[in-house]
Amino acid sequence: MISVAIKQKVNCSGCNACAEVCPKHCIEMVPDKKGFFYPKVDAVTCIDCGACEKVCPFQDGNIKLDTPLTAYAAWNKDREQYLASSSGGAAHVFSSHIIKRGGVVYGCTSEGMHIRHIHVDFLSKLSKLQGSKYVQSDVRGVFSLVKADLKAGKPVLFIGTPCEVAGLKKYIKRIPEDLYLVDLICHGVPSQQMLYEHINHILNGRSAERLSFRKGQSFHIELTDQYGTVYSSEPHRDMYYRAFLGGISYRESCYECPFARRERVSDITIGDFWGLQDAASLPLEISEGISVLLPSSEKGKSLIAAAKSDMWIYERSVEEAVEGNTQLYRPVHNGLSARLLSMLYPCFPFDKAVRIVIVKDLILESLKNILRSFKPVLMPIINVIRR
Image 1 (cartoon, helix red, strand yellow):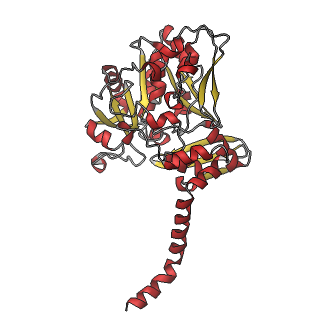
Image 2 (cartoon, rainbow, N blue to C red):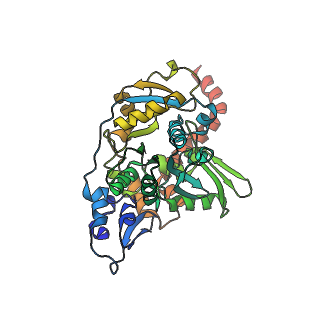
Image 3 (cartoon, rainbow, N blue to C red):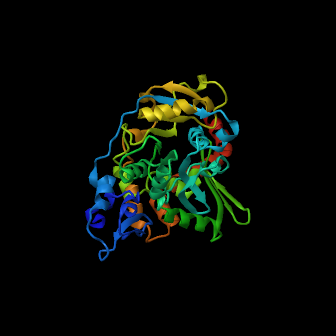
């Protein structure tokens, strides 16, 4: 029984594979106090078949990981799609290629305040999957849909975090040639409950119609309510963003993530190519970011080769890609601030809990701003004294 097997929350990523595989449908994913979902088993209905434990990536541990074969710096040739994407727009290129083959793409979308995985089979709907979503996606019911599409003979592209990909691989068991797996370089995920609370705090209870976390390479949160009013903030002024970028609001399993390493769980790993050493020497305007592509299977290399006519693509070293992305060699450290926030939230509202945790930083920033405002007055005085 999976709820008995998971003795510590660090051993569950919330991938939902156990709930999907249960033949009696007696496993429900329920949120804890912080909003993270964990399996709850109806002991009366359970037949102790063990399917839930066998499908769990954390319980079985028998997940095949592969070393990247090479690395690429890439970005979408379509300027409009490039600008609409978080980094280089490579995921959009792969998605378009699969749909043109009569296939289906599964990825994360933002529907108001609900972040979930959906399936897309029309090019016109791919825009729903663009943009970063810095929160855990709701993948309930998705794995069975992927399986059904594969049985129908459709090529399928699944894009998700490494733990979601691992859960899907365990659920599918034998991976067919027409299933393409793409994982994102993931730092960690806050819960949707944290995001809901933050949005409600910002919008005073008004519903959010649109949410975005990035403008190209720039981290920037923007909310639009039902009346068209826009809230826009840089990361250091927004409590949800500060907690995310500071790595203090993640799921417990994120701090010991077995997939935060060079060896990858998917066919292709995608992320921002941070630390690209000679970006200035690359042609064209790439101010909005570049994707890093790490194929870890021949299938992944084949997908890149098939879609490369729609991308500007340059081969790089794997070492260069790893050096710029810490999540390719270790998970985020569960530091004092993260542990403190875990104790304070949900005893305090999310934004207030974050403010308490980072109060020292907020005070120092306020003092710097005060000193900065006095600089035009102080500098002439200092110059006189120096004479």
